Amino acid sequence: MNKKKLGLVLLWISNFFIITLTVLFIIGNNSNYLISEFLNRIILTFLIIFILVLLYSVYLLIRFKKKTIFKKWKTVVVSVLLSIYLVGCSSFVFVLYGPVKNFREWLITTAMATMNHQYYCKWFYSSDTIKEVLGDNYIKDFDEDTDSSLIDKVEKPVVEYKNEFEKAILEREENADYKIINFTLNGCKAYLAAVYDPSKVKVGVSKGLRKYGRYAADIAKDNKAILAINGGGFWDPGYNSNGSTPIGVTIKDSKIITDNENGTTGGVIGMTHDNVLVLLNNKGANEALKAGVRDAVSMNPFLIVNGKNAFTRGNGGWGYAARTAIGQRKDGIVLFLVVDSNEFRTKGASMVDLTEIMANYGAINAANLDGGTSSVMVVDGKMINDPIDSTLAHQTRGIPTIFMVTK
Picture 1 (spheres, rainbow, N blue to C red):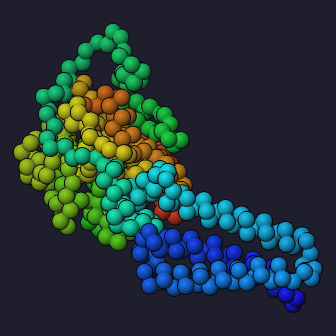
Picture 2 (cartoon, one colour; picture 1 turned 180 degrees about the vertical axis):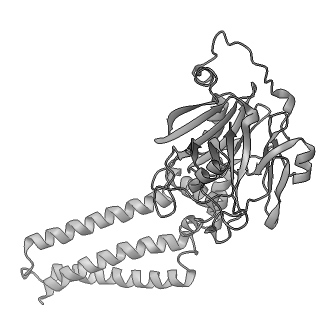
Picture 3 (tube, rainbow, N blue to C red; picture 1 turned 135 degrees about the vertical axis):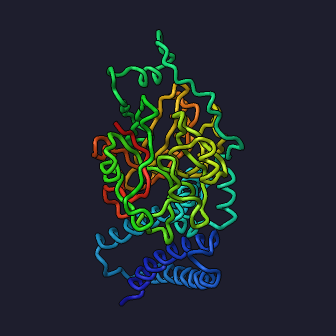
């Protein structure tokens, strides 16, 4: 191999490794989760070595004028590939650590909220950076419970609709139990069900409770439900459970099913005997029964309480994902909301989005339910939305509870 050819080969090799090692070194300086401090020192050492190799290759190319034996097209192809690689790596680093915070905030808030994908952001960001981003994106817990007296279920004739949202809710076929309103949010499909008789809104539970979860459609069929959405959160050790055990409080037909099992709690989201949606903070099952709750699950955060929207900063701290929420208007109409995500989990709804949608459609109380792969809406036994699981398959997962509408 002539000296100039050697210089060109070393130039290509050194550039490739300098680009790669620089990216790894930057990541290592921002987080020790993926690259330890010791490994980062080794990377720095090799980075210096390849910089010296680069300088030597330049020396060879300048020193020896002999024409290289590489064909011109080969040189062009390798040079173009290296340029593309450089642009790709530079863009990757810029997106992760550049001045534009959008991607950083999306990745950290979404990953930290889903629990089972927290390592995605810990790979690239230090605990201080994660803490800073979460401090700029959060939803503040309410320090009050719902006031049932604010719900007035006396039907009054509507002469003129206040806005398009009220018109969408109140315009319905005679004797309809519910109405599905379809729209798009952040490029994803969303489904809002207006349930006109709150007395028909109940909680359904999996037949395999504490042993295995079931698909929402199957739980709905078991209970002869005409409409259903997924319910509360569930215990998920290893983030790969079968969805068998609800967190917090579960009440069905005034009977306690679970009561803060496994040390996990969540706000109580339930329907009372007066058919009012109530949101209770830090309450056990017996306290919920004393408050008149007949059916309930546990999840958080609350989005609207007594007509007041939750205080949020940034995107609310939960990132963007498939979401499910429940709410109730002052006239008693119950709202079921499901928003899909996309294959890459980069879209869907934030807590801010859920709050705005519920407020637009007149909810005076509203709460977030379990989301992600659990988010599902079932109509007459069939799933109408498009959930995506961790394998990117278009399917939901087993869950322990649902909110449903019965005949």
